Length: 294
Image 1 (cartoon, rainbow, N blue to C red):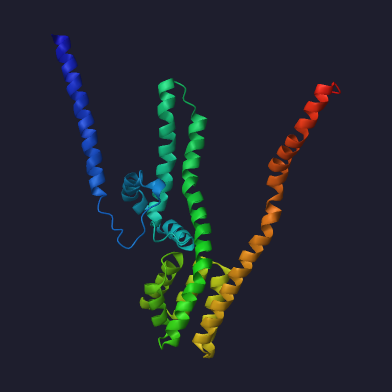
Image 2: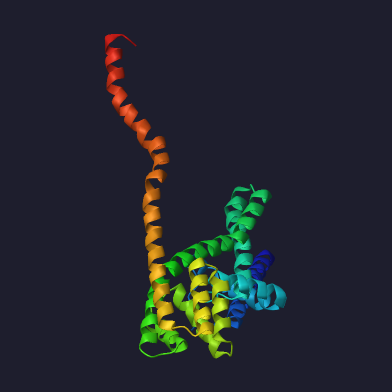
């Protein structure tokens, strides 16, 4: 009877500990709930499962990081077009969460088999920490391609709006409202926000060129600022820029088409040619074998 009472108390204690732990976790998540993302893009799909933990780390650690370090991360996100996806605090938390989650997921089956390899878990932690950095670089490449593709469209919008009698700021607002969604729209939206916050149009455009850091955008910004200084026709400047961007995009497409045969040489030599030789030589070798020559 005494043993049954001990077992009952142990079970109640274990159940109470589990319930307390779950309640504590629920309270922590409730403290970090209510994230305001009305004007932000949703996080990428591979982060959605761990996003509650990201918010938890942001609440207790990310918000207490040095301002200088957070500004550095924020500039990095802006230059890669990700400031509409997450904040600097969230980015640090994502790196930290993945550095913990990947080793934990790998340690569970290792613990069940009794063979835990600390060096393997350390490698997974490093991979988890740099995984968001790889996502940032991939997003940068996609953003650059999208900007080069959509910039001529926005320049056409700006040219038509200026021709209709609007100034550059009004034309830019119309282009943002009517233009296609994507990275270029987000960047022009930031330009409008900077202008409305009191910056000069030239400074807002220079910040645009620094964030995107692409030749096409830099040339466009320089042309607009120069036209504003010299007092030349803004419509003509925008029309010339739109035509140049379209010509450059066509030239890039021609270049890629001309490079395609060269890029096909290696797959042909490695995969196609050996298989072709095998198919051609197989009947000859079989014939020699039947004749006793081989």
